[in-house]
Length: 155
Image (cartoon, rainbow, N blue to C red; front, side, top):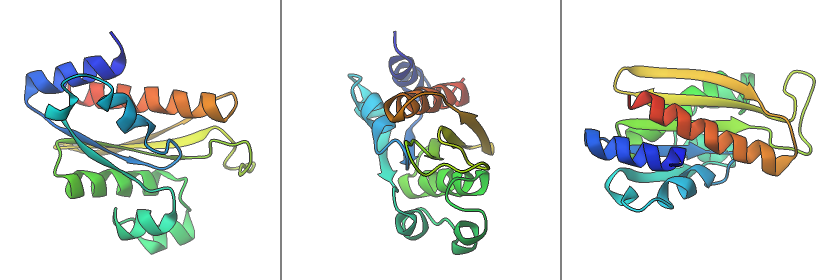
């Protein structure tokens, strides 16, 4: 059973819902969830906030956060997750913001760096991973980790 299948099954058992706020994955997390039969009972939707204007205007990421620490930061991931949970009216929301490559990395923020946010009824947490590999591998690993975060939140 895939992580997405486990997630849909668990959320259905709990009568809970989830949503996403995605940047570097471009909708990959939502796609993985909606590939599972029965996902319509638990997945409310997602926001693909690839551009900062969408992070700010739709998800409520503060302009100050984007100006001072940037889009790829724990602060942005947190605000994206909180914004998605509120906007989509879900129990759990996961956010991802990172640098999938091959370009765009710096010494402080290398290619493969992804910040995650998970907003739940108990609050919000952030964490980061640096995934190896090319753009496709970074994106795939990001989707899988985000699904795992949602599943853990629901347990």
